[in-house]
Amino acid sequence: MPKVHLMVRLVQVVTVLFVLLGCFVVFLYSPFYSKLIVAGLNYFVPVDVNQVAAESQRQASLSEHDNLEPGSNLWIARQAYLKLTEQALREKKTSDLTYIQENYKALQQIILLEEKEQDTEEQETTVTVPLVAKNSEIDAADEASSPVDETLFINSSENKALTEQYTEFLARKPVVSEHQEAVSEPEQKIEYVRKNPIPVQPKKLSEPYAIVVLGGGLTLDKNGKDIVVNGYTRLRLEKTLEVEKQNHLPIVLSGVEAPYMQAWLKERGVDAKLLEKRSMNTCENTRFSSLLLQKKGGAPTVMLVTDEYHMPRTRRLFALNGIETIPVVAPMPTPLTRWQPSVQNYDHSRRANYELLATIRDMLFGSSDCREVP
Image (tube, helix red, strand yellow):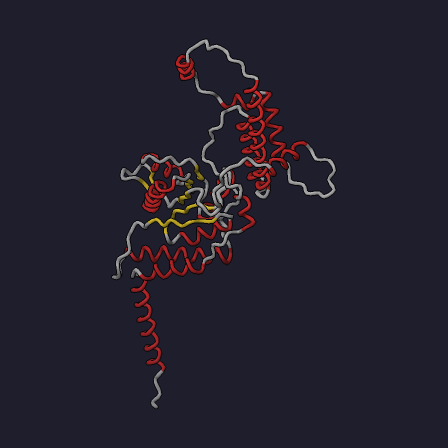
């Protein structure tokens, strides 16, 4: 067999490499490359919820409304709870949030029970008093009155003392002792409401408690001056409008884009009240949003709105923060072609490559540019 010259062999190898490179470039510009990457990410990236972190969301009492009557016992308890929560986050004692939430839930039930007993006593001793003014006149006077300054309630001496009492109650760490002889009255009350809870109809933990929308960036308006949401963010918000009509859930907007996202939704008749506007990357999106949901009462499961390339990595990070996610895929600004290579297909391939590399980095090394608290 004749011996092949070394230079000929080298030319053959280079030719094969160029052919393979050409095939890869064509594949990269085809609609199939990005689909393959997404399928791989969805298959290999784990989304199992961290059960330790999930305990902080178990209260499952998310509320976007703070419409308690200023000065009421429930309102004062809420102020004390928010104060302790902010302090725990500031001092990076996130583990304390679990028992603070549990104590807050017990305190709410204690207050409701006491109010119910008080209402019963008042009904038994009610004396009928003739009206001095007509209801319409009273209503008119109420409407004409000036808005109430809520700080006046919290600064009154009586409410300050009650706030301190509630704060001490909420800050009590659980103590387990088999030989504990004396049990204080607050601990007796906590034990009572745990054994005799007020009947409610809780949602299943697997049902969504909120819609979380991740920002995709901002851009300049056509006038070159005003800042508006970019194409990625706009399409996620459009998908949010569809989902909100079907589910009527609180909306959490995450990212520095949040105020602009809120304005965009408000122009279309949807009021998103939960804003997380400190995060600068995906890791912070998930961590800060989880802390916000925790602070607002807990949400074990949420509907997550982002694009399909971003979804696997984001779902994994939410799971690490104790939240299960239901994916709601928003479209990309440019659609894929059916089969032929194109520049818009390359946009998808580039996005897929970025998320692939970011996911590998997160799983191997973690995200080093992720702050722990807002």
